[in-house]
Image (cartoon, rainbow, N blue to C red):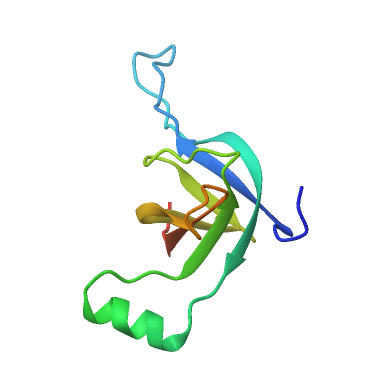
Length: 108
């Protein structure tokens, strides 16, 4: 898409299980919502330490263009690692063009 967004991340949610033929339920699983162009960055050690002190730890920053909308219940998969969103997306530069959100690694 843009040179400033060289990465691609999969946005997905956990689908609900469905009733099977034996009267039980199948396990739900990840359902891909869309794939988006983005830039994934690692915060500095100081940023990670400060966040940990505030009990708001995170592992990555995700920068993405305003073309996309991330719902709060969505997960992000990048480099075969799953992340949850931490907090709200922040407008970078105040122009409504690029947003940043913090990500925390999760085991699903």
